[in-house]
Structure formats: structure tokens, C-alpha cells
Amino acid sequence: MKFLKFPLLAAVALMALTSCSDSNSSSDDPGTASDGDATMKAIATQYLNSTVIPTYSNLADNAEELVEALKKVKANPTDANLQAACEVFLEARAWWEKSEAFLFGPAKDFGIDPHIDTWPLDVDGLKSELSNASHIASMEADDADEWAGNKLGQELLGFHGIEYIIFADGQPKSISSIPTNELTYAIAVAGDLRNKCYQLEVSWAGADNVADERAQKIEDLEWPYTVSGSGASYSENMLNAGQAGSSYRSWTDAMQGIVDGCIDIADEVGLQKIGKPHTGEDVNYIESPYSHKSITDFYDNMVSIYNAYMGGIDGKRNESLSLHAYLKSKNSDLDARCVAAINTAMLKISQMAAPFVLNYRDSSASDAMEACSDLVDVLTEVKQALAK
Image 1: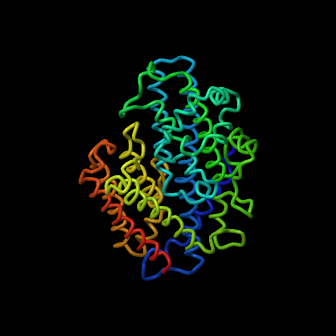
Image 2: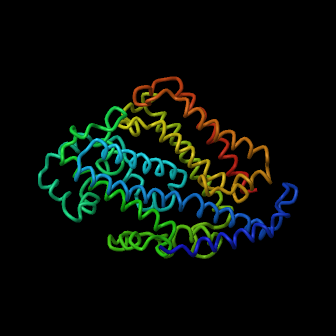
């Protein structure tokens, strides 16, 4: 594995931040434009190295492990092996949900989000596939992962198809209730899921900064992994903000892009993931209904916002190189309100009546929706403040 480029960038960015910290320590003295750019580049570097890339690396690791765990279930069908596969699935699922504050970039540009996370699952279509002997045979071939990705629609792919096979009523199924053809399908779909997770990691980190076999897999599939028209990875694109070829016109634009990602998921959780079922707009629009992990999904979405704003995932966080620290130095009241709004949204979601699939009408869902709406409002203020 090759990990050279981004640690070096982090060191450079840290020195840049240190050199301009005095001029950025007070809202009365915002510093020169170059000072602000250096600070924002340091924040972006921390964001990429300690939030985005490790999140997708962990996701790819667990997706890879899930394929092997499911193969083990098929080779040795025991409840213990299925339980182990379910645990890996939930870990992979958690990392995906913790990535949703940065669904901009390859997740959007390459259609990865709908490819691996469309719900509700087309259960009737899945049953039809499972009864198609020729399709099951294709899913048993060496290129089953590619066949699944190319031939199955997004309503049959990704997390929720696998979830349906291995979970029921919030618990791992009994292995005796899962036919071999269903395990064949789950393995093929998990292979495609793994490949898409590789694509996310390679797209952000760059092909030279991930395990060789992951980069090679994406090359073999001939999937795109650079920003259109530039040849740059998505991290390089952000770190080149304000320069020719970058999609970010300025460092302010890049910082606002990070906040936009947070706004989008806070809005989606409140209005769609919780709101559609709760209001009766679409009672079938319930995420993770078979594992009963909807509320966990919502909470992890808020964690993705927290990580993006506070400077990294657990174990890699550095608040001194975060949007939180930057805004606190400029507008401490707004920063305090933003941190409080994130924490309140997490709290209200954690207090929702569980499982959501059976309690989506409960008033606790309305409380969580309100908290998400308040978070959107505060984050919108943060975005506006960054332009000043």
C-alpha cells in the first residue's frame, strides 16, 4: 500500500495554519487573504485526510470483509457464521451512513449513492431473480460481481438486497431459512457493493494512495475515478481550490461545499428519511427495515456532519484544524449554536421510538424532524458566514 501524498500535504497545511494563527485568532482581525486561504487549506487537508478518506477506507475494508464472510456462510452454513456476516454488514453500513455528509463528488457524479443505497427494495423483482436459474448461474460465475452490477437494477442492488437476505424482524435470520440461491445472490451483490466502495476510496484518495489491488480493480472495470476533465482525484481537486482546473473557484467555495454536504444530509434525514413515513407521504420509504437499524442510520448521518464540522472521525480528529475552530475564532456564538444543533439532532434521533419501521407515527419522530430542521437553519447561517 502507498500512503505518501496526503500526510505530506497535512504537514504543509499545518505549518501554514501555524504561521497565520495569530492573524486569525480574533474576529476583529481576520488577517490577509493569503492567511485565510492557508487556514482553509489546512482545514480542507484535515477534512480529507481525517474524515473523508478514512471513512471510505473503513467502508471499503468492511465491504471487502462482507464478501468473504458471506462466502464463508455459503461454504459452511451455520448460525454462527451468519451472525458474523451480519455484524460485518452492520459495520459496513455504519461507515456508509457516516459518509453521507459528503455525498457530493464521486458518490453523486458516478451514481454510486443510488446504486448501492436505493430503497425500498423491489421485493417482487428480487423474488423473480431468485427463481431465474440462468441468472443464479451467472451469479455463481467468477465475474458474478460484475454481472450483478451490470444486470440487476438499483432496486435490487446494494445494502438493502443483502439486508433482506440475512435479516428479518431486526435479527439475523436462522441459517436454515436461507436457501443457497439467496446466498449466491447476496455474495454477488456484496461483490458489486465492494467494487463501488473501492471506487469511492480511489476517487477521493487517488489511485497512488490506496491498496494496489483496489486501484487495479477499478482500472479493470474501466470505471471513472477522477474529476471530469481534470484527471485529478477529488482530494486534489479540493486542495487546488482557486486554481485553474479545480471545480472550486476559491477556498471559501470549498469550505461552503463542505457545509453544503452537511446541509443536504440534515435536510434529507428530517424531511425524507423520517418525514416521508411519519407524515404519511410514503409509509414504505423506510430505510433498513429488515435489520431495524433505521434510527442507527439516521444517527450515523448526524455523526457524519459532526465529523465533517469538528475535524475528523474518532481517533483522527483534530479540532484545531476544523471548521468548528475557524468559525469559533470569527463568530463564537454561531459556532456554539452549530455545535449545539448537531448534538441536539443526535440526541433527538437517539430518543426516537424504536424500531422506526413499527413506530414511524410516534411523536418522537416529529421531535427529530424539528431538530434536523433547526440544524439545517444553523448550517445555512454557517455557510453564509463563511463568505464574509
